[in-house]
Length: 335
Image 1 (cartoon, one colour):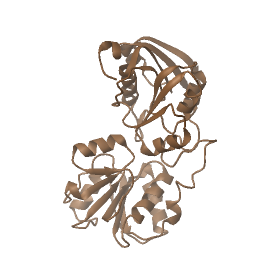
Image 2 (cartoon, rainbow, N blue to C red):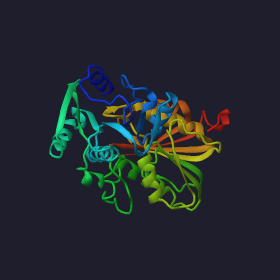
Image 3 (cartoon, helix red, strand yellow):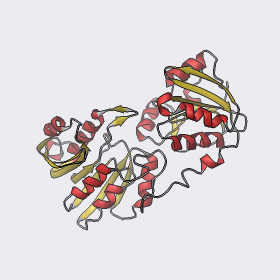
Image 4 (cartoon, rainbow, N blue to C red):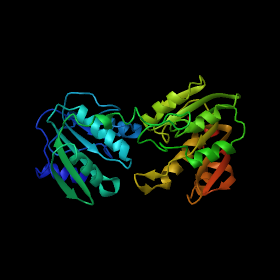
């Protein structure tokens, strides 16, 4: 995606002002844009991981758009409502007539997005390359209904979710199965990749739980979790779950780890969650996780825990309990 944008800017096919700040929404990585100094770029993203990567490269990042932008570039994601909302936010952050560029793969719905935008504004042109498209138009105040998508998002039972977050339309079956399979937990624990808080809410039903750290990489999901959970035992952390550190050894960790990077299946992400759980657990701590049955996590679990038990196998999922971490507090590592 960045390669397509870079080529369009290098060849002069796509417009970009010579001065002023550029808002870049949801890039797949810290953006390097031809002819644009890094200090002119401000990334808008809910990703803690991307924020850290941008900071390392001297690129400003924030979770919501500010103002004073000369142009905006929106990278589409897989969720159409979230993409519509981002286009609306970009348009609202620009002066009328400023260039607004939208980029996406065909598999991420760039063609429907182009069609929908054409119904509202005159699209100036587009640039097609590598199974995707970059198109652009002059910002106009015509996306008011899209701007309300988040505010109008339906509740999932008693829970608030939101466009673009994992399992935005309903409780994830894996999380539900894990919640139903957990024994009564006690002590201090962590929900790694807590999302909008469904699993954490189930854990906090146990009076013996003294503290629960909700660690979530997506700022939108974490804000929903804060709205869903008012329990004073909850602690909220916007952070990459694979890199988060807590000096106190955990008595338990629960997780429904993600296994996709974009559209690609990436078991390495789940393996990193397993390693993180082992690091932060106390000597007698236990790790409970749920995963799709086909995901090859057993070798990693056995490498980091002395005891690994598949507790439930149901509906394409497996619930695993792992105990006696080999790389936890007893190994002298900070969690």
